[in-house]
Amino acid sequence: MALEITDATFDETVLKSDKPVVVDFWAAWCGPCRMVGPIIDQISEEYEGKAVVGKVDVDANQEFAAKYGVRNIPTVLVFNKGELVGRQVGVAPKNVYTEAIDSLLN
Image (cartoon, rainbow, N blue to C red; front, side, top):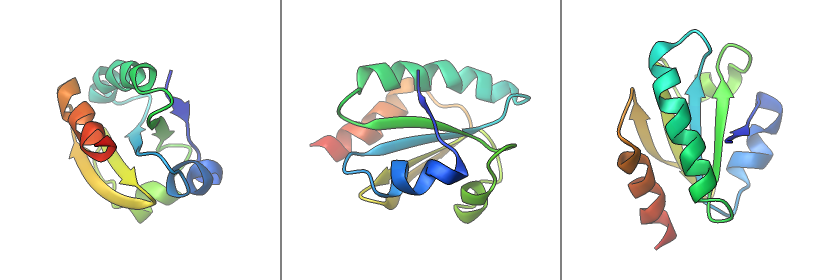
């Protein structure tokens, strides 16, 4: 399962990570988010120890969604060394997310 990230833990979990970080901004009421969720959970298991994979519930945690301009969900952001390096808005195939991580691991 992907890590639950909140406004309170975002800085420590995402911005200070020494590994690539994938963050899924989602909400329980969002249909497309329910399609992306299982993909993010799979990636979390496959990249355990190599990357941080987490989810932010935008209804409960709005600070970083606003800071990074997340206006549509699902939006998946990719961070490396605290910098935003990738953004995928809407549903995408699993390989779109894994290729983003792989490019940072090589």
